[in-house]
Length: 92
Image (cartoon, rainbow, N blue to C red; front, side, top):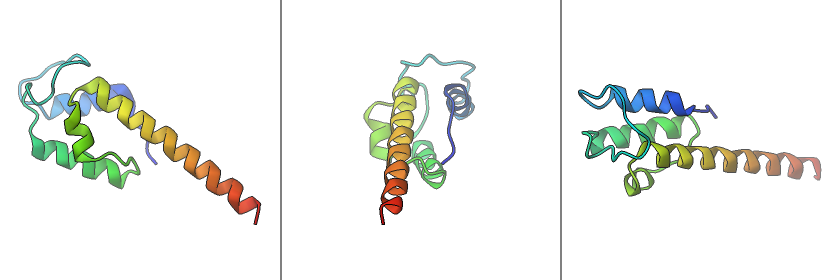
């Protein structure tokens, strides 16, 4: 799974909002001009990278801070799952 830093996420989002030079973590990304199609594309891209966030999760709270927390919590859950699978394989 590929990790995404906060700065990388911010850069990606800013590059997809026309006229945005900078955004704060608590700004509503939809109100800033990020459309649902782009959000769907983010979810699909991240899923391919092993980050299992859904479109509906992203739409629930469309701000940079929330998205980063969601991605990070998913990354931590993925690590726990891999560790659990590894330990199970040792016990066979």
